[in-house]
Amino acid sequence: MVGVPRSNGCSLCVKRRVKCDQRLPGCAKCDKYGQPCPGYDRGFKFITGKPYRDRRRPNPKNNKKDGARPKSATSDPMIDLEPTCQTMAQREKPSSLVSVDMNIVQHLCVLIDDFSQPYTPSPTHVVVRWFGFLPSIYGQNRVLDASIRSFTAHHFGRTTKNTQMVSYARSAYGEALHGLRKSLETPAESLSSHIFCAVVLLCMYELFTDTENPESWMKHAKGLGQLVQIRGPERYNTELDITLLKAARGLIVMHSMFSGEVCFLASDEWHDKMRQQYTLDLPPEVHNSIELFFVYFTYAPGLVHKLYSLRHVDATGAEALQTISGVLSEALEMQMKLAIWYRQFSQLAPPPTETLSSTGDELYPIILKYTDVSYATIYCGYYSYMVIIHEILKTCGYPGEHGAMVAYFRDQICKSVEYNSVGVMGPYRMGFPLRVAFEIADPVTRSWILNRLEQFSNIYAAAQPENYHTVL
Image 1 (cartoon, rainbow, N blue to C red):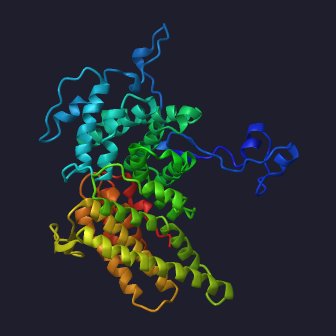
Image 2: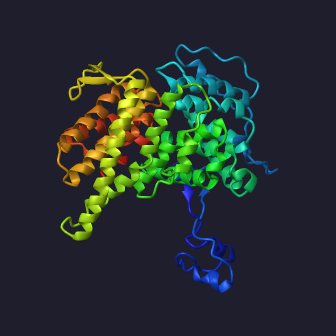
């Protein structure tokens, strides 16, 4: 589990082992001690999630008088992932392997292909770019290595229904978290790119595997956001770090939106970092347009928080009217910015076309087809944002058919599911848009969304219907 605070007091009081009064902006105990109060940024630690806590099991073969200790699954050099490839349909059998490490590297290449399906692997897909780094950095850090083994073994264990492989993945996950706790106590290692990569990978592991705690992704996303923020913008200066930051930012924004916390990415300093382009996988104008959307997207949590507050105020009071006026002004300004952005982006990336559903869906017999899943994901993010904007305008009583526009963009999201939810990463791409659509859906559409989520949860644990209860 990611992001568990150690104490509620300031770090100096914790170090001195005295009770902190938590006065703001600084505690009285530090004043009395004669030292400036360092504040209440408590940092975080990583502990094993409850469903996958590593447990030692008695082994009758080891009940010997010499007291020899049994080997754990993660320390066994003979563990082999080879059987997984034998059952993968139409897949070339890897060559003979002499160690688990070589086996993992070969399977990483297969995993990259699997996560790109049903489309050809392309560097324009952020997941392919991120996972593409893993084979070259495997073997350089023990925590990252355990994280890679955990995620890779789980994927192939689930794909082939190999329970032994899934069990090994859980053991490797526990090993990774155990090492991560130690790494975070080492200043030279705690803020390294390898540890950052391991944390992102462990968060992904939880999103795909934690079936017992429907809200666990919020805890892991919070810890991920804390690490990104503590590292500071100045550390994101390499292709790996920028790619990881872009892979993590969606979870950070989602956590902020549904937790009520401020999104720290909504600042010029972070925007400048995320705009960096280290590869030529996208034309500069397309890259810049996508990054401009993410700049706007970091402000979405703040608007959602204000929308929620409007639902719980007396609109007749003078203070409430002033609040409504401010929120309305922000929403209209963002609506104008998004309208300009959409006109420009739709000239660079073809908008979707309508086609018949291949599944004969009764509620949405006409679906949307895109030219690329990356573009589809951006368009779905835009539809989600427009749902939020029009819901705010409707709540504020601003003139216009905002209820109809909310329903229109909600349907655009639902019509995109058949195209953009395919493959291992499909449910991940559609997670946020469907979350927004669920918030404002009528009973029939909400039932339709829940049915799709039930299907997604077979691959993507975070899509369990238990996660979806209305917030707004």
